Length: 141
Image (cartoon, rainbow, N blue to C red):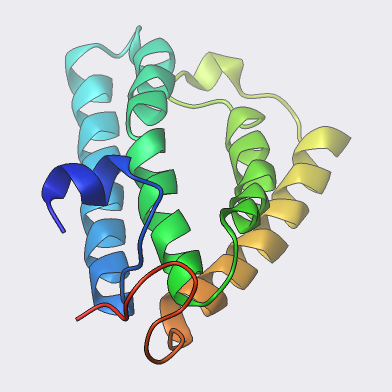
């Protein structure tokens, strides 16, 4: 599978190793970018970071879709990411002056994000994919 297919195609399957490597790179990019923005452009970090997150959203969803496929499940399981995204959007980032007391929306979305994140972690990160060919393609190497 080419890098282009890995990052931008929603077809095929990948194994746990590829999934974990992507997640390590993904979170290192986010942390590095956020820290860099807070140092270089502290007054704009809260505006620039969400744009960066949107840019890396498609590759993240494409890789996660392929992992769901390896588990024999549809890409519709990506909808479990919705509470994660909403949870991230309700928490101010980068500008301490934006911080407020925790609202009910933040509390509910954070709890939903925790549950969905745990489910995704177990399904995509720890459980073995289906053996052999499935409806989404051959078993990853």
